[in-house]
Length: 453
Image (cartoon, rainbow, N blue to C red):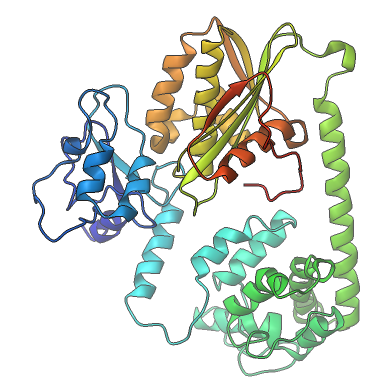
């Protein structure tokens, strides 16, 4: 009972028949947070159900009625909801995981956010929730990502935090003797740390860095400083600088060893360079192992696919390159209404490619994608863990049953450039298109240095 407000804030109605979902009161719109639909005028039918917005003949959204009754900002969000082929009842999805399944971590994050939002903020700071989500995309080792996540969560065992939890009576900084060692003091305010940032040539920005806020300082050094023109050659070392500041502090506390700031900087830069070199070698070896020798290239029909998605775009792009047993290549590209996530867009592209393959009478097909998560879900039978994709997988199994042989496998991104270019080029058009032809469209994007979506 105590968790009801949390569940109500995070659950979204997933639409089946739409018979049991009220348009104006149930949380079924997939916005940043689930919410009811917003009417376009003050007068509306309070008992309107979602099934009333579905065309009974096509079993798709009744767009003229949507535009007549709902605020325009609702329309793209509703179109991102795919309706099931079967008449299954409405259900619930958890809105704060990609899979749609509840997790304790996402529930805890939402609970902390609700608790924070219940009182007005004293200072303007970046959302730690969004920063913690971005941590896992930083190009560094896993242990350093975890350390930065802990720093943003104020979970690093500095003296001040240990004293607050009655684990120690000592609050002073072990390096400089300051009255209270906080995470921000450790990483940015301690004189030794200040020297590290200066020696690493991370410029001070008045009013931005350094500040008395740990999330603001981390946000600046890891992301915002690059937007302000600080070279990547400097900022790429920041995760290691944070880690070795922590290591130097621990050396002083536990071993009585003073590490000069210059040594910290040199060690961090050296370790960062070694890590990046190791990743380059690992990627090169992986791609070489993935590519079969030229004389053993598979002759069976295959179709490479890719999707292009951005959370702020009303459309997604999809691309496919289908090669039949005679070596004839067919190019496909399309745009469609926005999807909830990139994974939804990838699966939607696979479904479109499967339909095109069937229309071309290619009933024996291997589909290739660089989306490892999609391949894992399909090949390892993890579909039950993804209720948010229930409708898409229902259609996948229907199409799969029409092939004599159908499989999916992972390929390196470097081997999927053409499908990627078709997907990005389609989305860049900005309107609904569909192209399937043995000739690639004239607007196909050939550059592979564009931002990956």
